[in-house]
Length: 491
Image (cartoon, rainbow, N blue to C red; front, side, top):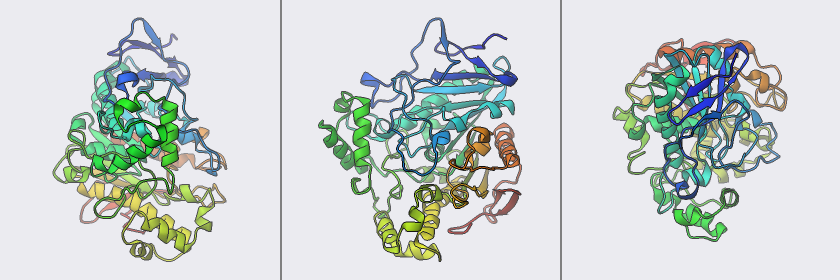
């Protein structure tokens, strides 16, 4: 059969026909390349082209990001990608569809994670073939990262990475039908920084009406800086590293590589500015400095407040976390076993006004075990639970509890472990040096993929909506079960 050709609002694209009849289109532009005056600015519409653009080969450029460093202790390539592929034309989407000539299929739009500084749509774990075989159009999007996407500079736009995601969702609404999808049946979903993005978009008036359902995997609507003033010192520190004024005009003249290197020298323990809010808490808990920020149009009020006031009440939401999220950061490096009680206290004291209370609440165990439970709750489980509580519409909770056998079985149900199960990509994500370990159960992947597709298609994942008086979640494990919603520091 001939390679499929689809006509988008910017021009025609030719994809590749995969086994089983799935059509894949790589690096389709949803916005103009963010170069020159479009750097540190809101995204512009994709530039039109004549003829047919080839989109059937290897992935194109992705967002500028730091090189992959050694020493993390586990292979993150399946969920983060292989690193930066330079090129300005990276505001693009990868699309998989079972039939571009059909119509009315549910559309799932994925926003990748990576602490707002790394990651890409084309990472191996996000291959959309299995989801397309299940009957959805899968779209995975790139967006601006780090300083390019989340550093508000005088003369520049705010929340640029979120604006990119909104532009991508707008493009999906305009082009879904061309790929066989239903523009009124869009589910946006994301993991980690992508989940924070999705949770935040639920409370953004700029994203209203662009999606019908949302899935929040290990994130929530809380990691939002209170004002652009919180970034003033960070901007000045990065500008000092570059030797230029802290303005968008000056940063536009600096090569991408230099900006990435400068932000990397600042975004390290001991080099970061104090990002605690008025309550004494850093909403990022020291994991990273870049995050969405309150502004005039994308986030005019805290997303949780917007949700409580009825924002996205008509959007069905599925949200959950993994039982041992923070193990990903501490177990492969050996930090969980090596850290001392005093080091834990100093670390938490830098981001919270009462570290002793948090440590006591984390229960018994080694200092590393306490820290893992504490940060799993504060960074992931708590914000997710509060997002579900704030949302006034129908929502559902889940808990991923399956334990990986990687790192001598100590990794557990860590951060990002659920991703290849959801996407049906265990084949490219399995091995003792990878997050799911050597023997992940394919049956669990089948059940999770089916639940996500069912939710995107019908709004029903396969268990009852969350009851505010008796909240319960689906626990995904070797054997699934509906269980009481885990509270603080409870598995």
